[in-house]
Structure formats: structure tokens, C-alpha cells
Amino acid sequence: MSKTLDRIAELGLTLPDVAAPAGAYVPALRTGNYVYTSGQLPVVDGKLPATGHIGSDVDLETGYDLARTAGLNALAAIAGVLGDLDKVVRVVKVTGFVNSADDFTQQPAVINGVSELYGEIFGDRGQHTRSAVGVNTLPLGTPVEVEVIVEVEDDAA
Image (cartoon, rainbow, N blue to C red; front, side, top):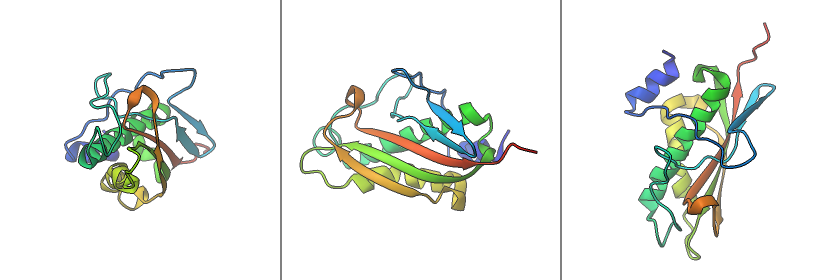
């Protein structure tokens, strides 16, 4: 087992199966020493545990947890490309989209769910740049969607 999967297990989490794409795209793609994910939703067992706008239909704490789940799903997509999360050199960028009520302004607090998860899993390698963007709707009514870019080991020998 990899050190990263061991760490995920220590946190009481498991890496989920890669979610099937809902359109004409792939969940993650490697180019050079980077892996880019498509937008990852907080799907659990094929379903969204909540839908709606954060700040009206969904509270901040639930939004945080959903961002964490979306971040774990992004790691599954990355593992699907790499085969081993130990190949991640560092998390480079997280972009979080928050389906926000009109007066909701705490998008960064929601996306902290994924940012803090990556710190717990990767330590210093999990420190990343980030954008937390409020939007008025997201696919399937999901409260949050996350995209991730990671730098990975060079496979050239």
C-alpha cells in the first residue's frame, strides 16, 4: 500500500471509485509533469448527498464537508491516471466553485474543506494556490465543484 493511501486510511477515509463523467470529457488528464482534474462533485455512492445553494438551502458546515468529499473524489481521479498517489510531488492549484445564495460571501470557508484535507493528507506538499468562486448554479444542483492541478514525478528514467 502507498504512504498516501495509508495516510488517507489514518484519517478514517477511503479513496472512492472514480466518478463516471457526466459528459464528453475525462475525469483527469496528465500532461508532462502535471495532472489536471475535471470538475469533481461531492458524489457519494453515485449520488449527491445535498443540492442547492450554500447560504440558503445548505449551511456552511455542510458545504465544507461537501468540498472535502469533492476533494477526495479529485484524488481518486488523479490516482486513476497515476496509479499511485505517492507520485504527487505537490498540490499546485485548487479551484472551488460554490453554488451560492445571493448574499453568501463565505466561499473561502467552504473551499477550506478541500484545502485542509490536502494539508492533512500531503503535509507541506498539500500547500497550494487557490480560487474560491461563488456562482449562481452548478451542474445537477450540486452545492460545490472542485478542480485540482497537481505536479507529479517525472516518469522518464
